[in-house]
Length: 484
Image 1 (tube, rainbow, N blue to C red):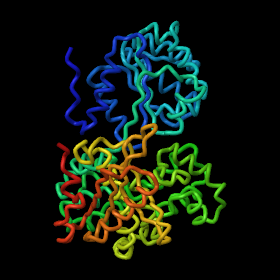
Image 2: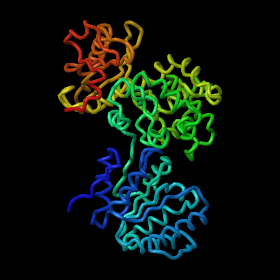
Image 3: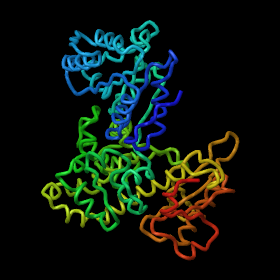
């Protein structure tokens, strides 16, 4: 049987499409429940709508409503799918029983499922019963996809003692497009321009389609103008999007506190203690807000491979970094339409707090996906790291540390140590710093015998570094070239 083809209007998402098709067309009696999640604006609904278009099935998008209102809307949707008439359900147990009877062995997609759970907390338990061997969903042969953007809710559906734990045969997280795919999606061929745009809007597909109506910068010379007419323009939906991303998370109540935490991280305070100090709180007070932001996938926690006791935090959504570093500081003049002055006064901050750190992240992404021949084998871990230099009483920041998988009884092998510079031509001094870090790690017991010293630059390399055979040099063209 030939697998259904993905509609041409759906950009990329080939792996996601294949997984959804395998689930929806499976004949196994054990394949009955799938969970699709991801932050808002990533195209989950777009993808599932295409799936239902190709394979057929029932599609229902929930809204924030009372239980009675939700049941009324659901009844109309089921009746329409059944061919007409009207269903008035007294409760969700009756509604689900009728749904699966009508759909039979077809596909059911319920989008924005967290809204239904908010109004009816018992709904996951009712679905558990329907999916049990003698339940009406299992008896009908239906396959059910639950989709939602509230990551804390969706993540909890299959965790701990949750009713649906152990029932799902598909758990798909729809993530932002990668930096290369994002450049293609925006129609940008210039890698420097692609980095600048990605440092603001990331890989969220909706930001190009719905939020700026397809407006993309046509050259580097057009970039500043594009920023002014889109993300800094109060008349464009993208202008307030970063604020809405926080407001839409159900677990976030004190929005001002969470903005303060994100602002501290955007300013370079990556540790719990640094964040607490920046916002005038105790370090112990940070556990809950950091946990909520992490569950919502708005921040990520990373471990320094050379200093495992202190995790660091980074903002996962570039638009939030841009908002906290640039827009929040100039909100009043921006709202009044004086974006030219605000943008002109933010250039240094944009380079140091937005583009620079973001470019480092792109380089780490490149290293993580590098082919085995680049560093000798596939990476096991890629992270930013710090190497302490006791003799000089300083620290060496390693922007891209690439490590092999841990092997019991053997020293941890370091495949590469890398330094990243966005707007500075790299020279032998940068290589010297990496060599020093390698020597210090060797003394600490790491295996550095095959470590590749790597320089990543958005501005190029001087002639001395280019003629040196001691470093691997990665420029913008290399970052955006498809690995062979």
